[in-house]
Length: 110
Length: 117
Image (cartoon, rainbow over all chains, first blue to last red; front, side, top):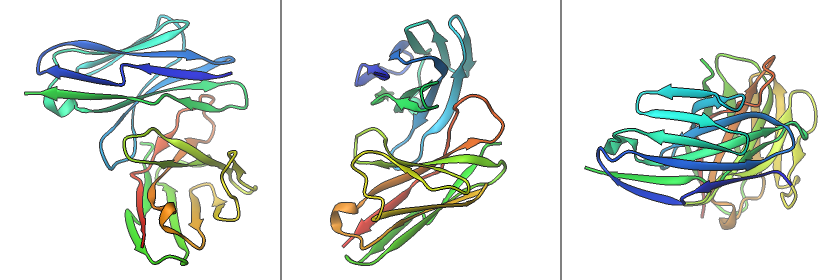
């Protein structure tokens, strides 16, 4: 069964304290691994697509990496405005479905 | 690019009335659109998948007669909540997949907050 698991559920950081969010996936034929950011009361904002193991992508303080079993979202020197829920999703060739994880709620304190 | 809008952004209605939510892809054509429901502090729950010109595919447990979906064009999908009740109050979010792209990237709208009194 296709599944995406994110950890931790919540993460509290001090401003400037770098860390990583984990996304473990099990899908029948990966067709893209996606990261989104969601602020309260808003729709998810697209961040990255990773297509194959070994790929990395960066955007400002965020860097996403992908292996054959998991993806990491590294946050370098976070700022309070990085506080949000980060969602991971995996595209599956099985019915072209996208399976979403439950998200990691990130809190960055000044 | 890849902007999706939703209208209205919020709506309050009386129990028993119907509410229509529009989802538009503004700068691309969307062969497939998705409707999600999200409860506070929970993740997205897929309700249905709609393909332009065909009937929507509903997820298990979602009443198709209650949540009517129409995908009339490559840029517009609508969700109508019929005979709404307080338990239908939620945050509804649509997303769209771009035509011609082989990967499953979805681009989300800003969401619609529905409150049923």
